[in-house]
Image (cartoon, rainbow, N blue to C red; front, side, top):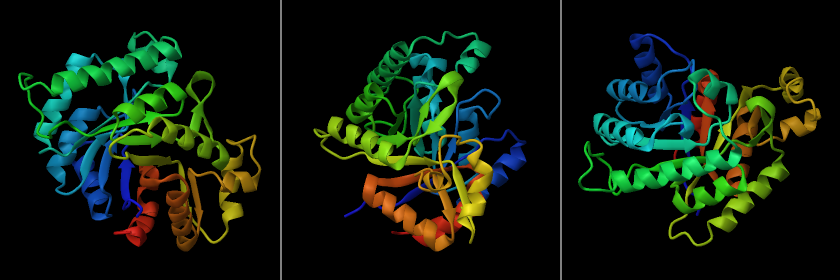
Length: 293
């Protein structure tokens, strides 16, 4: 029996308090299950934004997608997580990753480190959060027990293993990081291999994790070929057909996109899909069509 769908939207744009609350209410009206905030310089600060989202909404869960672990000291992060979980009434979902943009670390005056060092820090952060927030003596106290649900964004083997061992939600970008923090999409076959590798690491879990995919492109159209043309310059190594087959690209009629989403849940196990803020309105039609399935 497949896991029921959940849908999240990652809100990227700084705005006034009134505009932010209106955007969050709109996401709730459109049927999104999770309101998310990233962790990039120049975008909204995650934790105060989620508290404001909680004040404006009733139903959606609220998450970080995803925190750059290199920006955070574990003890200070534990305080933020516990406070935010309390102030949102136990609606927080904590997303963590290694970070992938060296320029942001340089701008913040923080060390970048090697890939191995960043994974080491992510692991230490996860372990410390479990220790601190699991203690009855830690103040402030989170609402959710035994802990706030943990999402980890992963692609490489070490982080996939970490995700399999520690995370409630395994998030796949459908892309690999290349030079200077740029992302290069994975083909459907490459994503098969990455999800399969994760499943190998997760074979001993008591409960399966929820699998998440970040969708980059959404366009409802009768002409798939024409709609994908503007994106091909950003995907120089792919043909038109290959671009349309990318798991993170949803282009076509509503029926075609619904069929693709259902097929990807069957193929990979993705039941939790996240879209970026510019796609919030268009993807809402897919959310409505798949509600309860």
